[in-house]
Image (cartoon, rainbow, N blue to C red; front, side):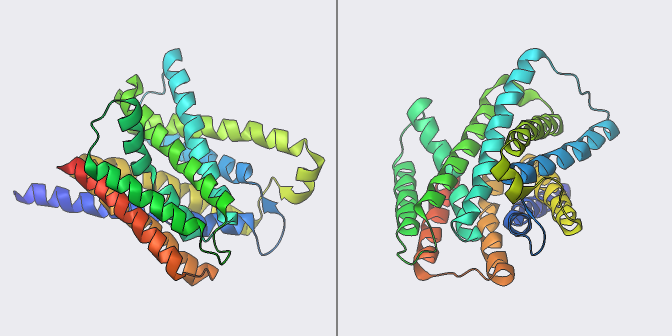
Length: 305
């Protein structure tokens, strides 16, 4: 391996690790917005409107700096809108699950998306059935069962369902990106439009929510000063930096190694939850998390062969 290749590989590993760790910070920034120490809470739609809105502004600046054209065709707009709905669904159900379980468990359940991607490809796109895939799916289901039946109230079944929907949405998002004609678009441009359209979708949701008197008395639209800091961190650290680092890591070290490094995502969320949010880590939760992470590793490493 040449010196330049080694350097590129090292940079790719650093970027892959950065993407995984930054994504693991989502619960830390989000929970403070959902349950602030002072003032009114922000609804999930409001949080995601600001997150994607701020991120799209930053990405627009990057596109201008790199002189990337904003021009798209109408068919591309339709495909991007579908991707935005899938991305919004993944993000919305992810943070909705935080109210029903420790954030590390929620992130681990969301991290099942490679398993759901493999299952979808096998059932609907005629991908060959392999024993490794069946084993991984079995382990993931076992992990879900363990997390759902802790018997101590740490994890609610509704939360598990919400996180499964989140993982399914993200799996379908990845499949659509890979299999649609939009895959040839610049990653920065694609991410910008998904973020911008996602922000518009949540803006419409906020308008609907504010029309409900009950919602208006429980949720704020404008964040506090501390809320703004959390939103900016959520947008920059967990959205812009994560997406750009992920794209470049895939180019440098490939999708498989990048996916393996993604194991640090739930690990980071678990550690932050214990240290900063006082979340507990029981034996059933540890067992369920280990089963799901092992299932994901089997899926991504099988693809590498």
